[in-house]
Length: 281
Image 1 (cartoon, rainbow, N blue to C red):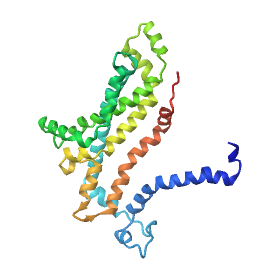
Image 2 (image 1 turned 90 degrees about the vertical axis):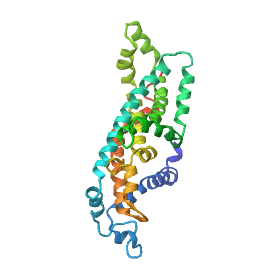
Image 3 (image 1 turned 180 degrees about the horizontal axis):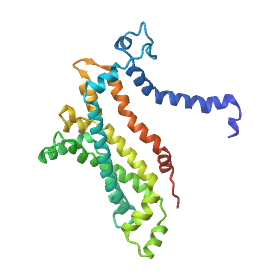
């Protein structure tokens, strides 16, 4: 790292790229925040007002979103669907990934590859047969339809992610437990899962984020306004014909992105350790 011993070189190779990356990454959130607290006059009058700054902050957009729409209920439904779908997907993925990666049965790697290929199937193709099943089981226009359909793309992804993490856990730990008389369930619960906590958190964050932001299934399976999820409801209820209520739209997007940001901030250390590999053979 001797080439970084001078300030100009550090500026060109480290600080300038990092600054550009941060600006590109954080600018959408800044724009949402600025637009949320602007009045309609400021939003459409670029001649008299700077589009990158707030001249006269207002809470009218937030007030309209929270009190003139069903946004609080949309938020609760979205959170419930995301949490339950994530829990179901993690439970199934842990069992599938452990069986494929640790039991060493014939054809296990082929099964793992097929599960990963199932994740690559576009949701826009899957939702057509899923819609038929949802109608047949009487789940249309119900959050339960989303809770049961989201695992169709969450389980393959989480299984593939956990397979890679379970592979990094030494087999000798399980062999010692088997010699001591432990069952497979006990090994999974008391040995493998505690060592795989960073991987579980990583898979959970990905599953929660995908559930929270999912649009196609939520648009196709939910029709009642009060039962919609945030991504669908904000787009469909805050656009009237060709009139876009940009202030309320940005307020809904900003408030909708906060739960995911908070979850990432709490578990960022575990998330990074799962990507780098916390357990080595």
